[in-house]
Length: 77
Image (tube, rainbow, N blue to C red):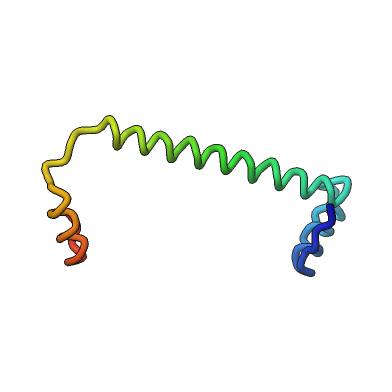
């Protein structure tokens, strides 16, 4: 796979390698992808927890019309 990077991105990767933090650019990209995957998994977990709280939380005393009206008026309930 070939990936085209902006000049700034190439320089950033090169600086990390020159600083001795990585052996090569491929290691920088691999690390970045692992961090990204971890971030996405945490985001997904956090979102599912919030959905669960909503489903299992107490019912609201407000009707859908109350919520829609407040949103239209830009009010917070």
